[in-house]
Amino acid sequence: MNKIKQDFLIKLKEFAKTLTDYVSINGGDWSIKAFIDIEKNLYTISSDSKIISKILEIQLFPKFKEFAENNGYEIILAEKQNWYPDLSFVNKTDQNIKFAVDIKTTYRLEDYPGFCNGFTLGSHGEYFRNRTSSKNIQFPYSEYKAHICLGILYTRTKSIDIDETQILEISELDNITSVIKDLVFFAEEKWKISSDRSGSGNTANIGSIDCIEDILKGNGVFINLGEQVFDDYWINQGVLQVPNPNSKGQYKKLTKLSEFLEFTGKYVNLINQPKQKRKQK
Image (cartoon, rainbow, N blue to C red; front, side):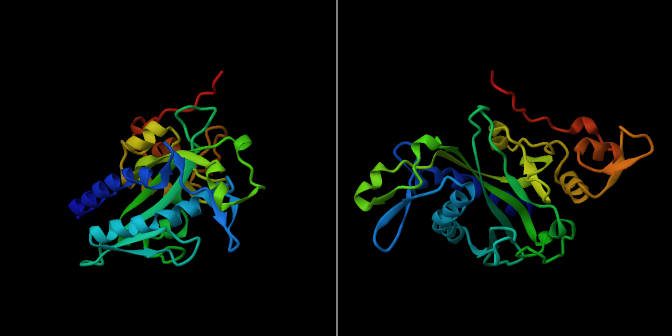
């Protein structure tokens, strides 16, 4: 089974490298520039990251379908908007072989060269903790042979160059500035790019590291500890009570990997330390 998993990952990684050219024009600009109505009016795309993510997902689906067909898989889309994962690749000859592929996007940080805003890598709630649960997931978590992030990194065009209020004609399409550019695609198992921090506010989402070089190398916090420790930590994050070092005899909810490793007697010195952001002067 490890050979099947590695074969799928290698092919998906190579496939991801081909997607930049598929979605780009003019040396790096995104090829999607506007919406069109039945009267052939053009409306500039919003720079809202959720809108960008959804349009990219739609644009890329024919390529995902082509990849699946070429490699003996069928794609099953998440039945509901908030279900995990975006794409389930199911082997046509052995339906016990499934791979979860989640499409994630984020943008480079202008003030921190080499860093991005980070990805949310999926929930660590019910279906993550209960690996046989069918809540908010296409197939139970344990049925997938790997959980993979198909990541998209991009640069946002400066807002001064974008006019979201304008309505243009088809003949003016070339005058519209793409809202994003310099897209880079990669595929990696999500545990390999995970941090030990939540990905979004108070929700139960796993957060990624944010150094682009480390992301592209799969050099996350858990890389020296392995996937099992990643699973154990995120199953217990925000739930397990650990000693509070600032208050003798008191306990607090687990929020850091170092706390988990100390509590369980594992090796704290195995925590990987990806590069951190430093404010530019």
